[in-house]
Image (cartoon, rainbow over all chains, first blue to last red; front, side):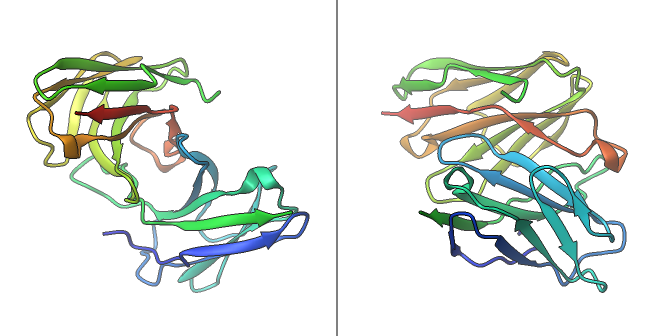
Length: 113
Length: 116
């Protein structure tokens, strides 16, 4: 089972910031938070990841609360091409090599003109 | 373009057919993955390979048979599939399985499989 909970869907007006929340209340100290997105019928695309500090790259910003139990992905100026399903993932360990990601249902973000 | 290619992009097969899906990564990565995405379901990890060795098999039926001849290529051989196996099959690669900084997975575009 996924270790995160996200809203099923969200709308955002084009040009405005999209703030996507994620709860991961059982996250352990050495687990990272990853965000991926999947545009319809394409493979998932990596967006950003973080451990404790807030992170920013050319695509988005990631804000992690001090207790690390939740995070928010921010797309500063959403465009129509940002319409996708956004997955918040906490790295889990499986066996001795654990590197797989458990993808939950994600948040379907619709950017509206 | 993510550096991970998959062929074919679409495949229709009967339940008695044998077919293979191919994945190739041009990123110099050492780990490769097969995922299955059924309609309206989250991605499900199927297999993990690291340095050509299978490290994870998530209880996948034997009608799916992976093959990893080298770190750049990954195959999924299919035989006697069922209609419920119809799904988008995604391949991914990452630089390695550890340390954490190598976690980023690059996904291919997927193969849309329909089993009649």
